[in-house]
Length: 205
Image (cartoon, rainbow, N blue to C red; front, side, top):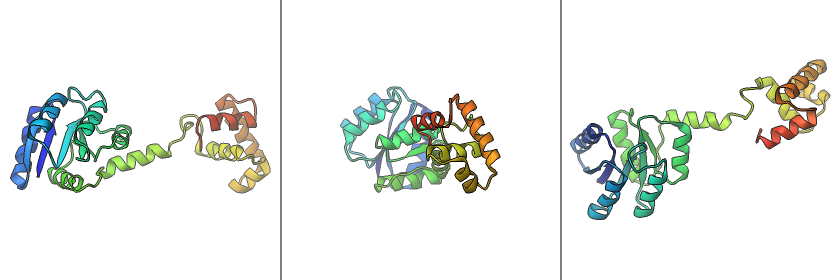
């Protein structure tokens, strides 16, 4: 399998190449920036898969990924990173990356991931998947409202009266009134209707 590893850390590149070639079945080409990667694609491509370091020269965020993707068509292109961040991994996948590989992956896992992506699959380590799921479940008001207050706010968005909210959440009606008052105060809302409008505008769900 012919692969291209583009990373500006000489030691990491050399270690990866040595390990992959020792595993057998890998022919590894190296580059230290996006320009060299683009040149290698023209000179010695095509490759079964291309790995791009997220922070190397020429990447400019995910622009380097888009540039290389445009040059290689259907060839899988994955991002490797020393500081994996769930939001960046998600953006990379949305831009067409075949995967997002933390440099802390065990060597054997890295080899398996490369083979997996070269076969046309997408790869994300379980830790990043869990972090992405957690971010997706977060709400715009996590830092201001308690979980119970967020439940009350959802009910307000649904147009429910205090009596209905009390029944649904198994609370006393005076307790619901207190929660509504706190929600309005914390959101700077004039009343319950205004609180619901602010929630919808913020994408609260």
